[in-house]
Length: 287
Image (cartoon, rainbow, N blue to C red; front, side, top):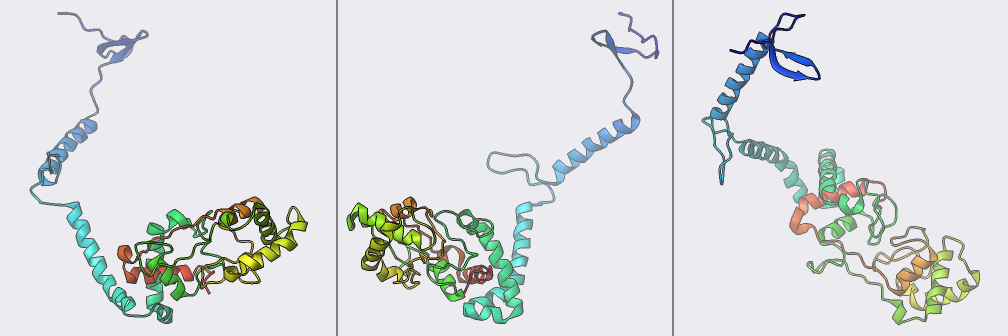
């Protein structure tokens, strides 16, 4: 038999492994570690027997205890739904503008609306409801269709320019490239820009004001402050959907962009929409 190497300093047998002249000592594992290791094996075997563990083709072993995390979650959700049902039923039967008159319902609606907003609305309006180009800021005072809680509820429930809902709000600005000369588009863009800034060519403002009166005032108003009945934006508040420069304003006049908001009634149900309306109205910009 091959004689085993003994380390000269420690007197311990080596394993035979050597790296750069350094030999590995064949010390036994600490007893506490070995005991812990075997206990872990026993625990793992017991777990596999008692609980779901091994995946099968279409399912998994169920374990002798029959435990299911999905069933446990479903039971917890059912308990939560039962506890919320009193508030949900009251909100369902109450006009949205009356919710704020009941402190307990208002607190519930604020919490539920905030949660629903984070799941369904932040993708477009942002986590802080601050909006983005083409998506309105829900914190400011600029509301295309009115900012009272009923108007907000109507918009959420039925959407904007949403073909799948007969009660959706519809308004479309025509493409004025087909109605105005390019010079007139530039003039009216200069006039609109002059309402909140200094246009590049002030000589275009006066003729642009006339073009605006002839073509735009019917929807945006003679003072260009918009009209919620038409969903026409206020052009004198320096809040812009698609850019604030003269060129971007001219592009929107010539070939306007039209956003679409889906109707949420079918997906969320009226009680959740009421909670959303109350929450959004509370952000500070609501009327």
